[in-house]
Amino acid sequence: MADDPEPIPISEDELGELFRFRQDPTQIVEGDGVVTAWSFAWFPKDEWTRATELWPDLLDQMPADHDAYSKVIESRLKAATAAGAAGSPDVSPLHVDELIAEYGDEAGDGRSRAKLSAQVARHGRAISWPPERNDRCWCGSGLKYKVCCGPIPAE
Image (cartoon, rainbow, N blue to C red):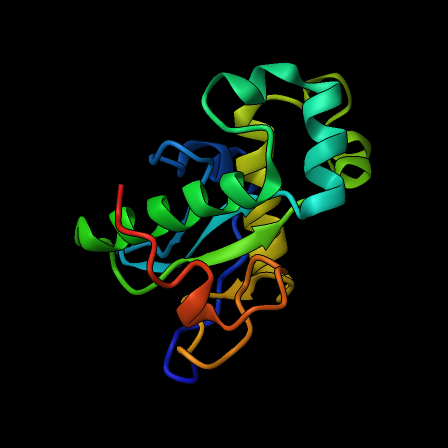
């Protein structure tokens, strides 16, 4: 959104301390404690398949089917927003190769996903959420948001 503040750069250590919801969102906080940006990590369809092959523990709390996985993320986005968090989160598409390049053996760890999520948001590669009703859904289905993830209730 046009009125949303730009993310600010912070250290990798700070990034790892800032996520607090269940699906690797990261908040970027200014010195006065005001959240200026926050984002949920999300794997696009091909990346989800590869991520779950490399890190099967992702399936402990998420469905294997990508459409169902995206619906869970939508539900969590709505729940986090309803909980009174500042502004709307973005969705940071994660790519397995980028995770591995950045974090090596720790690439499958939730903290690494959170850090990369913040980097993606900070560099302007995150998907703005929520889309308008008649816009294409953020999940990549090709459907309008109002018939895809839009009706999904908060978790």
